[in-house]
Amino acid sequence: MTDLMREACLIDGQWVTADQWIDVDDPATGERIGRVPRCSGAQTQQAIDAAERAMGSWARRPAKERAAVLRRYFDLIMARQDELAALLTREQGKPLAEARGEIAYAAGFIEWFGEEAKRVYGDVLPSHADDKRIVVLKQPIGVVAAITPWNFPAAMITRKIGPALAAGCGVVLKPASQTPFTALALAALAQEAGLPDGLFNVVTGSAAEIGDVLTSSETVRKLSFTGSTEVGAKLYEQSAPSIKKLSLELGGNAPFIVFDDADLDAAVVGAIQSKFRNAGQTCVCANRIYAQAGIYDAFVEKLAAATAKLKVAPGTEEGAEIGPLIDDKAVKKVREHIADAVSQGASVVTGGEPHTRGGRFFAPTVLSGVTQSMLIAREETFGPVAPVFRFETDDDAIAMANDTPFGLASYFYARDLGRVWRVAEGIEAGIVGVNTGLISTELAPFGGVKLSGLGREGSRYGIEDYLEIKYVCLSI
Ligand SMILES: NC(=O)c1ccc[n+]([C@@H]2O[C@H](COP(=O)([O-])OP(=O)(O)OC[C@H]3O[C@@H](n4cnc5c(N)ncnc54)[C@H](O)[C@@H]3O)[C@@H](O)[C@H]2O)c1
Ligand SMILES: O=C[C@H](O)CS(=O)(=O)O
Image 1 (tube, helix red, strand yellow):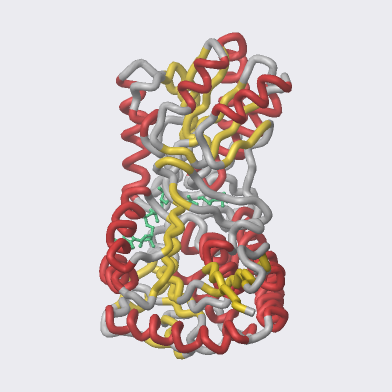
Image 2 (cartoon, helix red, strand yellow):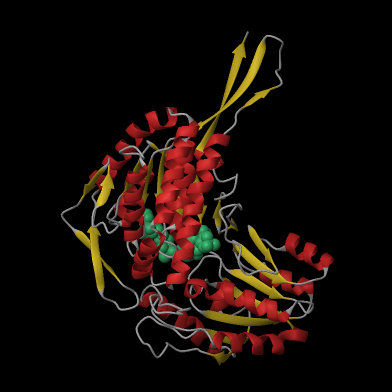
């Protein structure tokens, strides 16, 4: 059975190391769990060259054959779900139940795009002359560079390699240095599934050094990045000279609106699910909760009561619901947001302090009396803090929700049909959850507008970004 714990990188089908190493720690304990190579720029270039060599024959294989390999890959990931989840929790910290869910979600992208491989259709279009025929081909875009974040160490990877491999592309992946082991385990299983040597490469190391090689390479035709808007903008700029096709899944600042006709108990469940998943460390977490004046006090009371019941514990502990934050910097940002809000008049209804477990554990928190002028309204907290703002009218709610340069996810609870349509159409976001706090599925187009990014991942739309359209004009 394939060994999943790899302290080496995969380049051209070989597991390689480097002269220098990067330590990886367990966010729940701070203890070192292993190390990964600090790959060089030259090794990154070797990975690009390997991906280019391997993709030729892979793309020429019938789609049905590529699909069969991806199906085997899906089956292998699901067969090792528990071990992969345990590895993911050790390096990222999320509760084991959430990690198992992420592994299934991640495998879903491999399954979905394995099937989509067989449905990459071209066109024959009505011609402009009787001696001409117009044919449209769809072909793999070329070598893909993928750079991924630490908060979903499996799903953010397969959301990229799934469509890339299905389209016939070669891939070089740079995972986050905080969570490399899940990526390397996925690479080991890809080898077992039968992906050709060199088609899928994983390099760990200095983000800037590896990023420079990936963005400046003219062999790399596509960059798919998930992470902060700040880094995304930098990579966008670095990619410009080589005119790459980019997918950017960036930061968010999701509004969660509760109208006075909402089912309050359902809204509380949805707010808890959206806000506290992964201890608030997801790009689609409710970052600002707006409650209409007439139900504000009742909603805050219900939300605080449910929040106070959440179990804070290491992800491996039975019943854990809120794991540790990823690092000390994350704890510092949460504390800054709370302190700034309280200094401007907000109140801590529950939580508000680091958890008694110490380390990177933070008590799930509800703030009331929050206003748009506070840091927590303008920045992505990326932690377990639920700030509740009061609003009067529907127009006020839409205006406050849109008062951000971001536009990834948004949520609202209401039952009036006209209100649902007006708000869903008025919110500036790529994703709108109506009477639900959970929107994540490989079957839907995931992505943002404004500073939250470019492109969509998942769904039948997700493979288009890994294809080029070729117009063939036939003279007959
Ligand atoms: N839109 C989405 O789907 C989505 C999903 C998850 C996370 N995110 C966002 O990601 C952020 C948190 O994740 P993070 O802290 O890992 O983000 P980050 O931007 O710091 O890092 C993301 C990845 O980019 C790499 N990186 C950093 N600087 C780089 C550089 N100069 N050149 C090349 N690569 C570089 C990192 O090593 C990591 O692999 C949040 O803003 C969150 O909203 C967005
Ligand atoms: O952090 C953002 C991820 O995209 C989370 S999910 O895909 O919505 O689960």
